[in-house]
Amino acid sequence: MPTVALYAGSFDPITNGHTDLIRRSLGFVDRLIVAVAVNKTKQPLFTAEERLSLITTALAEEPRVEVKSFQGLLVNFARRENVRMIIRGLRAMGDFEYEYQMALMNRHLAPELETVFMIPSLDTTHVSSSLVREIAKFGGDVGSLVHPVVGEALNTKFKNG
Image 1 (cartoon, one colour):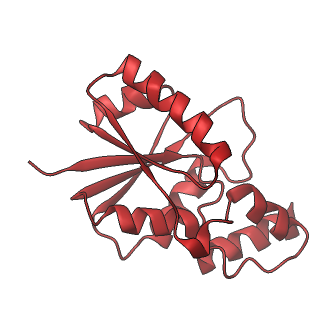
Image 2 (tube, rainbow, N blue to C red):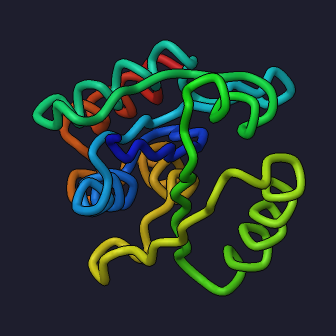
């Protein structure tokens, strides 16, 4: 039976840190679902549809990656997708506290799910979506931090926004 994992986040926008983790995770899973969280209480820069499109384009050469969106509890989405493994990235110690708490709650809600923590590559440890948005907002160069299509989308948002 193929191993399918789930990598969920807001991806507002997807960064080279995300894509690095996605590609490296394909070394130990057969298929990966990248799940875009839709939270109606938050105001993301990109719509869910835009985020899905950006991720699909950035990962177009990865046939084992499927991009979907979801609302509500991650564990419910994982069950609907018949996934038993959740992949989470840890950039810094501050991430660990939050991610550990979430993993324990997910285990409480869905004991059949396992959470696997991955550490980013050294060259992407400092990359976060919020920092990328901030740099782009003020006209900084994000070319080394995101896929070219994401950089173009950021430039368009901030020129027209």
